[in-house]
Length: 160
Image (cartoon, rainbow, N blue to C red; front, side):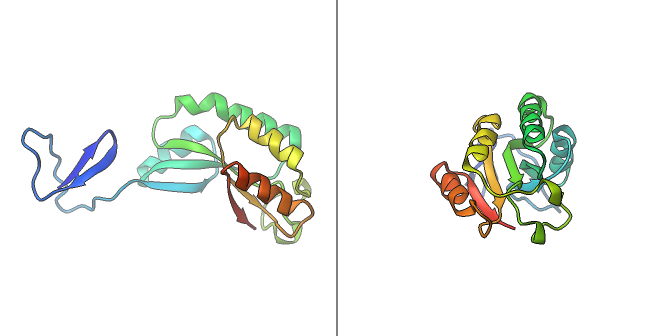
């Protein structure tokens, strides 16, 4: 028996406490909710679809774009974050713009640029404290400074 309290696993027991509400999981799997760190799309759709697939939370991902456009997109996400019906949006994953065009895959190479701590700080402010993951190219100019900036602020980093 898995005991849930306030949306979290509180205990694993052999029997349910007296008076507890029980739900049979016979023939099914019981697992904690998954967190998807890399989802693209409109937050409302992503939230609903992620929940259907077993995720209870996600990071919404934005790719390389012009500086002003990225700021606008982050602002739009902040407005929408309170109206989601499904998995919870834990914040933002910026996949770029500080990427290496030689390794950029299908992302817009024309929007990739050298890392700038000043621009990164503006993006983080626009995310209103919800920048959680930053994908960047450490080998590009400014990459190491951006990594240090992220580390000091608790933003997870990954390379591309």
